[in-house]
Length: 275
Image (cartoon, rainbow, N blue to C red; front, side):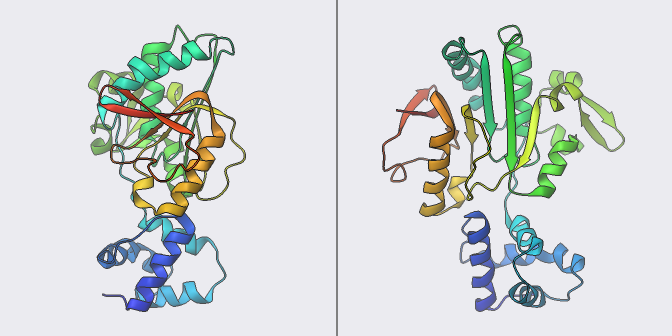
């Protein structure tokens, strides 16, 4: 099954418009592979028929479903462990010192996929900062573009493969229980995280100012305009002295015309902070 160049360009434009993500010229196979389940759901025989339906239907949930199917949702518990080590050793202690008067800590995992990253942050806070944050207000928000992914994250259920990717055995025993074919997240963690559906390329108006924002491995898939929009959103939501954590290969170079961010090195991890 293949796509005509005209239909390939349509799908690529749809993805960019809905999410800001770019699709390389060589990724036709990815479209064919990831949209195959939608063919059955929509009772159409070919991708070309699906695209005809998209073209002739007002923008609706089907268009978002196509965009969601094409996004990468790669994640794991404590992904890139050195990041979490530096967040534990340097970032959180500095925020606690800065916010001691307000006794308020707000963290946003801005592209949380199925929830492993915010749950990792929740475990880190419980294991290492419970006493220091005992009388604090702690708000841990996690968001993703896909409503299906957010529903999965809220359920807090993980397969054997997912639970064993990056999760130390002692934390698995403490915070997860076997439930049939899945592992269920303990209510202590679930109650710490508010999962929300947020499209980062749209204005984000309903969130409070944050002390720590994790936006890892998101900007790398986008071109300049959506990157700049997202960084503008981050700039408006980050408290003075707060931290933005990007993925390893990501940077604000040529995106932050105002020079709002300064880079801070913690070991082998870089953070960005409002100037």
